Length: 134
Image 1 (cartoon, one colour):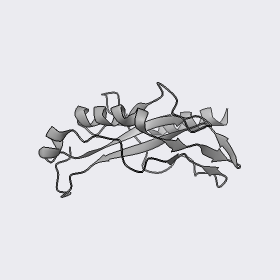
Image 2 (image 1 turned 90 degrees about the horizontal axis):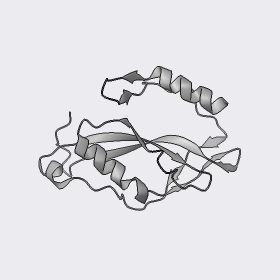
Image 3 (image 1 turned 30 degrees about the vertical axis):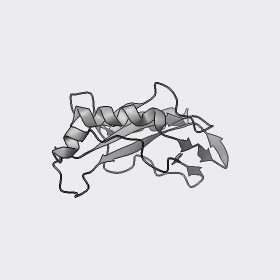
Image 4 (image 1 turned 120 degrees about the vertical axis):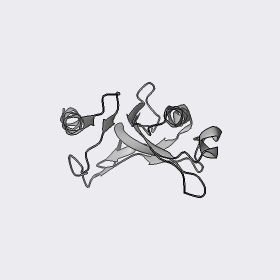
């Protein structure tokens, strides 16, 4: 029940862009609890492929994914959503395509492993860092 209230509060604090994506609030809706740890990424290297055509043009962006992991750390199938688009469909698609390769340690609450929804940013940056963003 508490998780639903938090999710509803977060959704109410978000503003829509009319294209199916939302902007997240600039401040947390609820402060993280001291006895709660979010999932931790385990991939030593990013499995996300930067679309070569966009990289060559210096196109950069950030995709914010909403993911859900279960109490074993496995991503819950069909739970992935783009919470905030990069503004480039090819970058958004590349982020989504990499999700099955992402690995996580489960979240913890009071020392017990639990399922949890969380936001995972995926950054697309050119090596020079002088790219074009929307």
